[in-house]
Amino acid sequence: MFNKRFKLSILVFLVLSILAACSVNSSNSDSKKNKDDSNKQKTEIVYASAKDINDMNPHFYTGSMSAQGMVYESLVENTEDGIKPLLADSWEVSEDGKVYKFYLRKDAKFHDGEPFNAEAVKKNIDAVQKNPEKHSWIKLSTKIISCNVIDEYTVELVLSEAYYPTLVELSMTRPYVFISPKDFINGETKDGVNGFSGTGPYILTEHKTDEYATFEANENYWGGSPEIKKITSKVLPTGETTFLALQKGEVNFVFTDDRGTDSVNVEAMNQLVDSGNYQMVRSEPMNTKMIVANSSKSDNPVSETAVREAIWYSIDRETIAKNILNGTETAANTLFSSNINYADVNLKKRGYDLEKAKEILEEAGWTLEDGAKVRTKDDNKLVMKMYYDSNSSSQKNQAEFIQASLKEIGIELELIGEESTSIANRRSTGDYDLLFNQTWGLAYDPQSTIAAFTSESSYLHTTSGIAKADELYKKIDEVMMSTNEEVRKSLYADIMTIVHDEAVFIPITNGNVTVIAPKNLKGISFKQTQYELPFELMQFE
Image 1 (cartoon, rainbow, N blue to C red):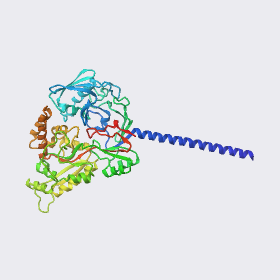
Image 2: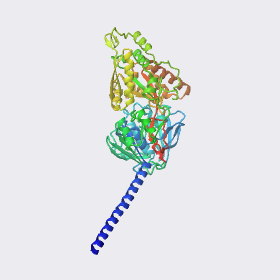
Image 3: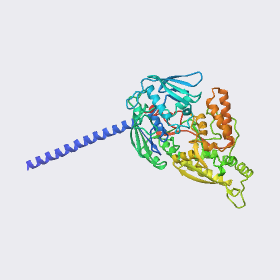
Image 4: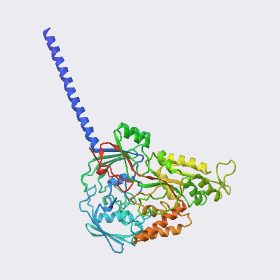
């Protein structure tokens, strides 16, 4: 009996010992897991994107600019205080404005270990220049005669003529940024690349198409390794799906991206901020959201100035800004906001005035027969199509609001939502009546948007049908070559007046970049562009 009790006691002791050990191990495991999760939360950003990052070749235009901006860098950087050094420590410009000499930094390397030097700069710029049709929209590409290596860390850019926006266009997210020559195919990039090694603060380490892309900190970055060690771009449908992902912690960062989409609507943003876990940070006005009208479509009412002007008068911008966009943007009455250089021009005022819109249409011969809902002229109905980004809830809401307003003056507007890439293609081919778009933004304007007026891949179809098209294009060429500041101001004023009077760019609101991020994420700031964010400057408390 004693032996039985003794054996039972030993068995109970062993069981309790095992359970205690398991409990300690489990506690240690949970503690380690919580610690790992905490460390991960302090070094990782997962942001929601409506689109895949796509092709990261920096000499193409299909990739996400916010993603490319993490990986690749330019010679110079456009800042609030003007052009500053980046991969070039300094530079000199010849008296005639035709030669730019850049002195390169000596501590930069590509992600694959290849040196960044004058030879690499020449190979990249030559690669861009070997694809002239792709880059015709950027005027600098038509001015470069040669890129010459002076010594290992000095390179010279020779232009055919003086071109004042040279440094601004060299600072853009693409195409004049640098990828390792080892990634070239047959010494070029126009047929694709073998890899994506830049000099930037982050390295693309994994990409699963239409699911996610992972970027890890470049520990050998010349500017110092970033505090945020891992950034994941996660593809999610906009709206409720992204909102729920934020609530669940599957993503912890959203921003209005370079595709112009709204991952989360304003009400949802405010709800997240009210929860106490998130902060909302907005940039200064960056761009102008607008409707682009195809003046070259001669068989469509949109080719008439009067029709375009009537549409302008029919848009209640204040209500759009206040009610649809919840005050996150401001009403725009001109193509460029007044904080844009050269844009302080006295232009004709066109406010919201339906009676004025009706009067303009009547004078132009567009009449509304008794009982009819749509105006006609010469047996043609006043009907047009307007395209908007199907991934942008705010564009859809604005389109429906404008559609209802135009109905009141006798214009029938058919709304069509499409992918942003499809809309960009329509803009290039001229297969549109009206479509939503936006100016290039603070860092690039007015010169970049205005230069695009003459580009077939951008706004040539928008501007080519107006009466003063030839005069407009001549002035654009002149302003880009002008070295006289007063002459430049005068030319820009003339250019802006011509397109304003013709109402081919119908402004709606001035937009900005909005970020929703964890409350303890510090260092959130903005570049002079709506296309990139300086993730390398961010850190968690």
